Structure formats: C-alpha cells, structure tokens
Image (cartoon, rainbow, N blue to C red; front, top):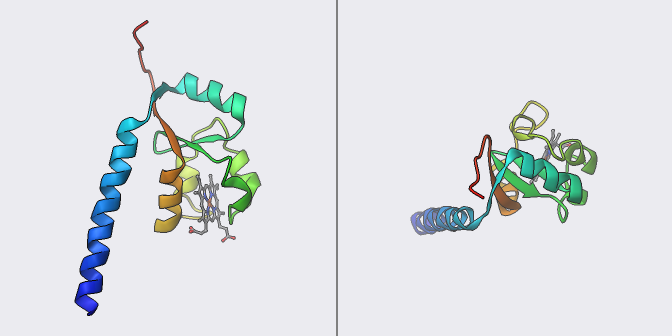
Length: 112
Ligand code: HEM
C-alpha cells in the first residue's frame, strides 16, 4: 500500500512538472522594461526566477503579509523569495508558479 501511494505521488509530481512546463511555453515574453511598465499599471506584478507573477488574487492571503509582496512590485523578488526571511516551501513555490503571467528576458531585442 505504501509503495502504491508513493508511486502515485511520483506520477502526480511528474505530471505537474509537465503542466507547469506547458504553461511556461504559452506565456508571452516581456523585456525587463515591459515588466516594469506593466507593474506600474497594475501594482500587482513581482518578478521571481525571471517570471512576472500576478499577485492580485494572492497578496492579501500571503502568510508573510501583503506589505512584503507590495514592496517588490516592479522589482526582482527572487532573492527575497528564496532568502533569509523565509526560504519558501515547495507548496509556496507551486503557488508562485501558478501566478506566472509572462517570461521576462533582460536585454530582449524585439523585432518591430
Ligand atoms: C508570489 C510570491 C509569493 C508566494 C506565492 C508566497 C507564499 C508564501 C507561503 C505559502 C508562505 C507560508 C510558508 C511557506 O509555505 O513557505 C509564505 C510565508 C512567508 N513569505 Fe511568502 N510568498 C511570496 C513572496 C514573498 C516575498 C517577495 C517575500 C519577501 C521577503 C515573502 C516573505 C515571506 C515571509 C517572511 C514568510 C513567513 C511568514 C511567517 O512565517 O510568519 N514572500 N509565503
């Protein structure tokens, strides 16, 4: 029984990795300047692992408080997210991945 549960967990883990990968593939690509502009407009976007995360539906539920999220709007929150105040758990990382709305590439050159 224990082995079956463990096998099922492994399978779910593998499947979830594929799902996240598919989502990432579909996301638009923004330059860092585009990310900053979008963040100025919405006041809800933070950057983690080079992905813009829309925190609008999550920030008031954040266990660390809304203020810590809003401090990083338009900035790079990667170090803070994996940092000393709280090196976020696996489930926090999953929530963060679900909030991704764009991949952000520094020095992106777009064709007109
Ligand atoms: C989309 C981004 C974020 C998500 C989804 C998120 C999610 C979470 C979750 C689920 C927890 C509960 C503990 C855990 O599972 O690790 C937590 C705690 C915490 N978070 Fe975040 N977080 C985000 C961004 C940030 C940022 C940018 C900071 C800035 C430093 C931060 C600071 C903290 C702190 C200090 C706690 C601990 C609260 C306590 O235990 O009293 N988080 N976060």
